[in-house]
Length: 320
Image 1 (cartoon, rainbow, N blue to C red):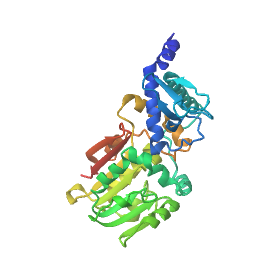
Image 2: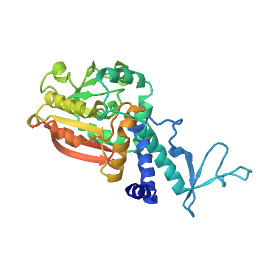
Image 3: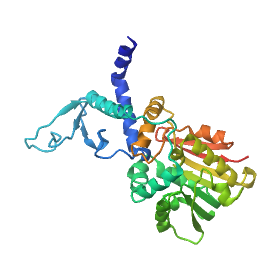
Image 4: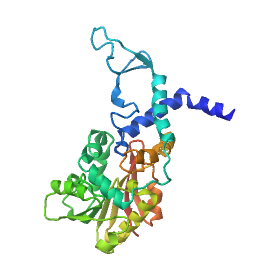
């Protein structure tokens, strides 16, 4: 009886519509860039028209076209909107049920180094392209990174996507990443004598490399999710040690993947996060409670903003 009731709940149109919406948001997210055109999960680009008079969608499959595109004798298939939502929901959930992944998935430092060397050639397209801009990530980078000043350390610097957003308030910039391939891409973009490049593990080597209280600003964008919860906590503790205290103007600037404030979307992230991370999502666990991790590290959150339905958050933190 309970099972039947649960199944009836699953096929309610409202829930299916929400599942389709959640899937669309997460597919567009850089954190979910593991989904490729060959994926069995339907892509948003497949939806070519929506009827204004009836709740139906026209799906492009093979030789089919929208009936209004021309007057050729081409077979067109109308698919009820609820059928599409069921397909999106089922195709999203069924592959996940076949994954047997450990909890709190995280890439080990050696794996991160090797894997991100491989990703370096296409990383900008996946994480800095049109989808990222439409989700508000470029605006967040501009807003948050304009606050960076003095001696700046950026961890997980990657290919240098943040370089255009730094201002003249910065006196020096140290870019640290565990992947030499990613840093080589960053070098190609960098200009100026005040930028240095360091290969290192941000979860354990910041204090060893730079010493305590060295930097006015420490920056990270979208790296914590790759480290898993414990790795992210260690990284935040390392950042806390190398940044100057609040009384000396020190601060930590973060833009991170985060569990959504929308209850359903948050549930969907919990359901899919580990499968996404292991299925080609560059190891990113996109449902972290970053605010809780920051507080566990002993940092104070001065400001927190969310965007894209809360799946991304920016934080300004200080060490008291």
